[in-house]
Length: 172
Image 1 (tube, rainbow, N blue to C red):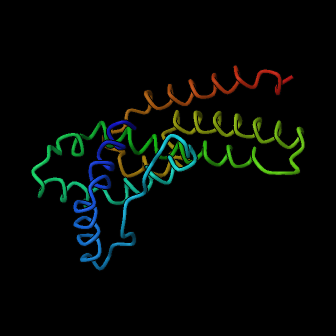
Image 2 (image 1 turned 90 degrees about the vertical axis):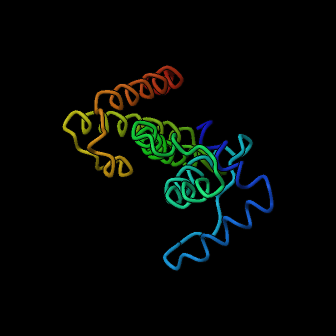
């Protein structure tokens, strides 16, 4: 996440660099997006959209940084790209549960149900990874040749343990 933030901030922090990057995106007729999303820790929910947009624009970002003369070796590192894909997918799932727990008029039963449903979803994703099924982790599908299923299964198990620890009272 730190590397991704640093890369985007290097483009967005300087107005000239940002304008040049936007022009590069606008020149490409197939480009769906015309700018990068800025991530801040204040807006945690922006993390998923930030990572998603970064992944979509990665070829353009790499080309832009290459033209600028910056080191883009990390952006071509297959392990880092696979980790980025996994982080993007998991962050989007965490954003969803976060949004489900917010809002007026939510009862404690609805919130406990949402947490328990998310824990079940994590268990399902772990079981699917064991079977090499990436149905709920779509960004990883493009990275299959570089994929180490055991690593990501362990990460999901860790997230599940954290949820079970933090929401221990919800499972009683």
